[in-house]
Each structure stands twice: as structure tokens, then as C-alpha cells.
Amino acid sequence: MWKLIGALLESRLSNVLDETVRYGNETSERVGRAVSSYIKGDEETARELIETTAAVNEKSYRIEDECLKILGLHQPVAKDLRLASSIMRSAIELERINILLAYIARYAIDGRDRTPPHIGFMSQTVQDMINDALGALMNRDIQLLKRSTRNYIQLQDLYNQLQESNRDFSESGNLMLVARNLLSMGHHVMGMDDRIAYLIVGKRVIHHKVFYSVLMK
Image 1 (cartoon, rainbow, N blue to C red):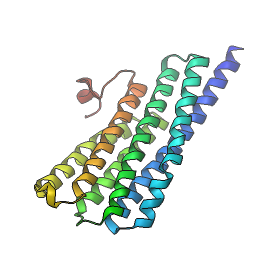
Image 2: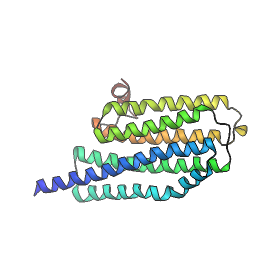
Image 3: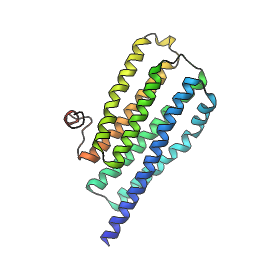
Image 4: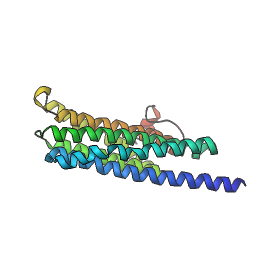
């Protein structure tokens, strides 16, 4: 009986993990498309991204609901509990990233600005962070988690460089708003990383001094 219950729990966790990874991959791809639409002034793609945001984010609600059912019905402990918690937190952060990319798409419709290469680099860095976080979640891979968190430093550096070269905010159009949204996406990936680190090492490390000794070596 207990083996059957354990197998059912494992199956449900595996299924919801797979759904989360698919949702994350789709979100990463949408980030790239949103920034591309802004750089190119592609209103058609921008409108499509905005219009599909709510439907895409329905996946977050389904994932969260399934995790709550797992927690309520199976009462998992130890690594299974940490996995369910990591999946649910990841889905919530991915939902927020999709909302932010919809704002970037909105700026594409409002009008194209002069776009330095920093924006493209920031977009790729966010996508790399998401992909590494998903890999760490799927495979309990501490090296991918390290790379995801380290990339946030690069994201901050790119933002600071852009801010330094656009001190007159009033003349930058929507450029700095796009950059801020990308930086905020990095914050949300760090939220994923925080919970994934807990899954892998069994302790909270991102906002703790252990972060420096465990993840940044």
C-alpha cells in the first residue's frame, strides 16, 4: 500500500516538474521574442505576445494548484517536500516574468527607441538564467545553479552600464524601462534559484552568508 502511494506521489511530482520545465522553456523563448519585437519595432509579434500572456500564465495556476494538491493529499517530507516547494515557487516567478515581457512588448507598440547592444545582451542573459535554473531544477545540478546566479551579476553590470550612458532619463524613451524590466526578470529568476538551492543542498543559501561559500566558489 505504502509503495503504491509513494509511486503515485513520485509520478505526480514528475509530471508537474515536466510541465514546469515546458512552461519555463516557453517563457524563456517569449522573453527573446519580446525584446526582439522592441528592437525591431515588430508590432505584430508584440501584440501577439501581449494577447497570449494570460493564456500562457494559466499554466502557472495549474502547476500551483497541482502542487497544493500534492502537499495536501500526500503530505510529502524531506526532498519531495522541497521539490514541490521549488516547483511552485518557480511557476510563480515564471508567471511574473511573463507579465514583465508583456510590458516590453507594449513598449514595442509605443514606438521604437535607439537600442544599444546592452538590451540584447541583457535579454540573452535572462534567458540563460532561466534555462540554467530549469536545468538545475530538473537535474539537481549545483553547477547550473551556480551559473544561473552568477549571470545575475552580469545582468546588473549591463544595466549599470546602460544607466550610466543614459543619465538623462527623459531622453531615453522606453529604453531604461525595458532594461529595468529585464533586471526585474533577473530578480525573479533569483527567486527560483533561492528555492532550487534549498532543494539541492537542503538549506536556504541565496540570502544567507552560506551563499558565498557554497554557490560562488
